[in-house]
Image 1 (tube, rainbow, N blue to C red):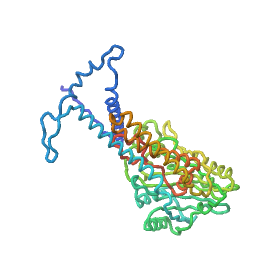
Image 2: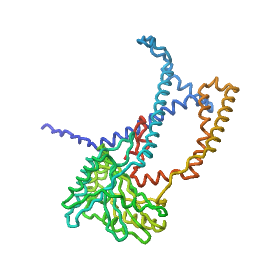
Image 3: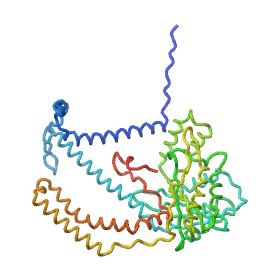
Length: 465
């Protein structure tokens, strides 16, 4: 009797597992490219022999192809003439130099985009919408998720190369002897504000959405202090926090902690949001779900699935208090921060939760920093002229410029160096960054995002979110 043979069935690779494997391959490729460039730059400068070992004599035969002339036959190109013949090593050196020059250019674009994201959204107008929902209105835990999904589709995603303020900022503000006020601060055209206003009015019957002044900004007056702490995730962004499940205690804990203490004029929680259009973020969550499927419980898997199915925003969570006394304001912020413990979500051996950072104490009203004095500018320019002249004279007399013509590029750089040093010292003395930080906290400016313009190595320059 012939033996029956069972054909092996191969389980198809999931999209999440394929994405995780591709990320590992891309990381290995970036590391290999970096090692290849370092080797190409360092290898010719290693002396041979070393300790009596002539390593170059052993390696050279395997690299003989680098000295083959390319192209092997003359090539005529229209309007360009004949392509010259050079060793392959020379062509590789030129190609590497061109690639590194392109990387340098993209690094300049990268830094410029980060600076623009920090500064361009400052001072942009926002519209504050006060949202009042009747206390008798029926509510379900899924209503908030449905609302966020609809807001996600109504607001355009951000472009790191053309930065703008975060379009949405959810606000809860508490003042003494008043009810907690919830609102939505919108940055964008009037048409967007009108659309969001109508959508919020459709939450339930009797909901009122009115454009008013921001109550927290109204409390900022000279002589008062603004205390701020930023909350961040304790673990990786792929892990959820405890807002999906049978018990929803995070929002209730935050609202009760907002009750103003003695000396506090206003306390608030602000969630700055910008939608993420690229859905690849969920692959990290699904890959984690597959990895922990045997270790995570049913509730933990449900939390991961809910995170992968929900809308994605770039977020910044700020805890704020305006007070006459900085100690009272800091104590209020710490009280609100303690309520974040309700966000703890255990997933297998990991625990995710929101954790507030140190409390920043700023003046409620910040004046613009003074400009660099004219005498500092004159001294910096005069010192730059003298330094550039001395370097030019030194390069001319030593003959270094004839051997390395690029050395002349140091002269114009030296001209602006003293002025830049004086300006940096002046900015440090006058705390020139304080107005920018103050405006960024109040204006809903998100942390800079990786513009992804540097080839191959852009993930090493910062995390995308």
